[in-house]
Image 1 (spheres, rainbow, N blue to C red):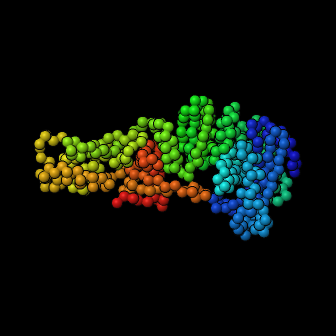
Image 2: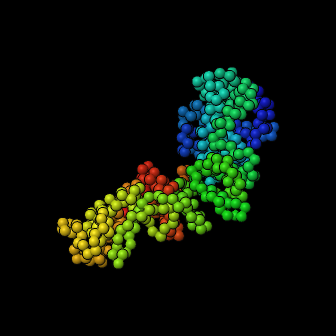
Image 3: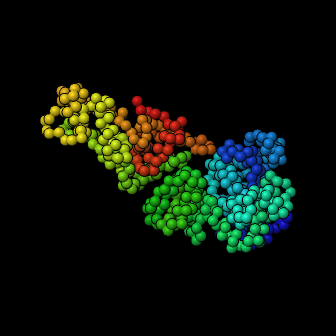
Length: 455
């Protein structure tokens, strides 16, 4: 096999960033529990090729099946460096490079997770050579590395050792380049970058800031030349989402990009809200739901259905309802269940003439406060039943403590949520559309991390 890869080396000189053809061997295929046992790659940059190959101590046992598959045993890695020890050698070569791997999702995820365990942000554009082979050779059905080696007659020393697989993959990339031509090869590759490449001609400070991002949860803060915030965005996969935002002129013009890592989606919303509150910024004044407010009218607590808009509040809202009619129906049912006078609450369907008796009391089905016109007793009963007010969309547990944990190193953050709002560190409450979507998802899929605080 020609390992000089002269044609590919010259071709990659036209790329704006280094290209790294990488392969990993691991203890297994679980992206969160298994660990790297060997790393190898060829680093192409400005006409030079740097070769890296290293066994890694995974700090856990290797199954007999994987040992037989890769030929890497526990004894072979016992004295090898851990990833934490070897990471400083490879991070400068990997960060800011285009990562090319066969099934890049696997290799990219393992690298990202290994760095995350060290609290090191790592993300890079990636190209999957399985998908590239499908694009360039659509007439063939199989595109695994064994099939590609056999189909193209590539010589390989030993499969499932990292450097042998890197050399085989690089040989295929060069062969495809010669057979299909630079234009077709590059056009196919550009359609497959995932995460995407950063836009060309991007300001250097934004390039540096983007490559310092993880591809996980966090909040990006964008500022103009005056230092004023122009946008605050929550992210689930920060690098890839910021790379796409930077294709928009308003983000590409930013004078500064800061980032706050978080452990999850709810944590991101809270960080964004607290930053907005600190900076005196308001969320979009969008209608979220309808809620119920209680007001004293001549000393008597009345219930009113009002639009709920995004923003900061002194207290959580009383109920969340998509439609005002649903809120009114819930009010009537709540009043009946807790023996509250609908007339004193002001929630009867029609306005009664002043001084007219409560129609429910005429049926002997109203509250004792109604019969005696005891406003104080009415107010006490209303306040006692407030925590039983239905919360549409969020089940019957409006007040909850939600715990979010980092997907790898386990850092945990707790949040108090009530009726669709989350409490911030200074005691204010915040609600917006994104928060409601996150809470709704958590109530459906993450009950184990939700503690009901409602009495």
